[in-house]
Length: 346
Image 1 (cartoon, rainbow, N blue to C red):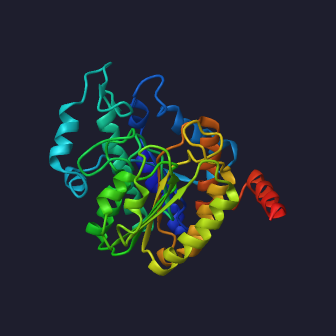
Image 2: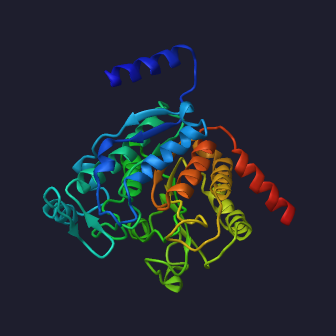
């Protein structure tokens, strides 16, 4: 019944000439990934973002859709069959967990959730390419940007953003996709998967001395399609914005992407428990606006995928600031106030 109503609403909107809106893609199984009560990747993370969108009156401007499960063929574009078999073989029974490493844990429904997370990104790509949505936010978990082609890590099982990018290349023959990772942790999985792939521009911002503790000398200049931008602990909004403006935007503008995929982590916020950067939710709004403005070549085809952000209040506010810009609703009052203070300081 829900699917019929959604199709009817889309038909009426097309009939009236109303442009497609941003889509929020999720699935109930994302709440069933249970890595343990003290684990930072809590099911409450998705609820916190949704609650903040409703509190800020953004929710009513979004359309919603339920993710489907990714296919084995789509997963094989990124991950080895041996690795996928390992994950399936170690899915624990109900009420138990399987610990891959100190941080990365599987509960009974974790692999299903990871498959639907990748499926959400695939569905989002289809919707923006078919102009059924202007752009998309995938409210999915577990996160994915630490998952390599043949290994898990950092809470991540399947690299959903990478699956979405490879699917877009295979299905729509795209040749220029920008993957933009602003999680506070280095996207080592995405780095490994897309190293030296000229079809992918990977822009990667992170705190230098956090997991997975990248070798910055080795990373620097190692792949011409990648720009890694490390920050020292305590980096401010002004430092962040200056480097993005000077280092990222010229490269992104020259690349002229046909599609943008955000690995959208919000744990660089000053109040998040895992990072030590000094960013504000206004910085995520500013970054989103600058990317949209610079990459006009993609005609708004943007898919954003939830990665990190583990303290609920700053996660909700930061994700809402990001989504507000993508939904074309400008900047919130708090963001505008913070931006004015930054201008006064400069």
